[in-house]
Image 1 (cartoon, helix red, strand yellow):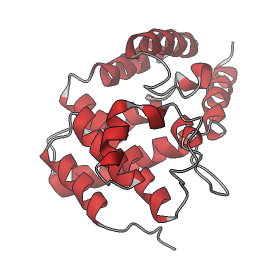
Image 2: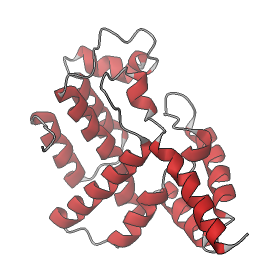
Image 3: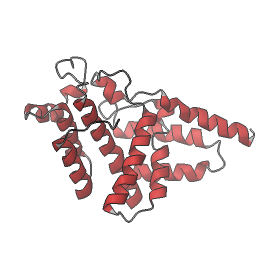
Image 4: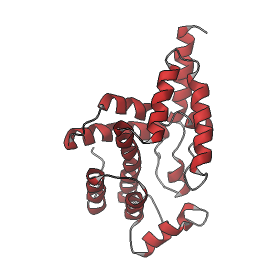
Length: 212
């Protein structure tokens, strides 16, 4: 395979993520003309990472973080966007790691890129921990944007398995809005540090409007 063919083959694989709609939004029946794709989520995580690094002055290699985030959903080009409510973490990791390995073995730098992917997935280094927090918080923030646009009807969730989750039901029973439930769920489940918690709480307590 020529270098040119390898470049385009990899690009076309990644391009698929422009058309993979985030499963969580479909599960919650988000009503909007256009719902976020996985590719748009990746972009959002990268922009959030830049802002978090800027304002809280983390001692990290931000370029490494941006690279990690760029490839962290690569496996979804093969297995699709599977949520924690659809498949176990272990099973998803197994499928995703194989998919990423198969995709990257055609690139000269494939092994190096795969190492970065695995580093992100391990959540052990300071860059991986930071990137993981950005990944999760970005999704939480997006839920608030959709909520502010009145895109979700909690009375229209009959087929939504996530809606029936015990933690979700507990948070909703406490009077939380859909997005506040989502944000507080993230605070309980993910390892947010004090800075990420502060941003999460700001989002809970303030209206978010898209900049026109």
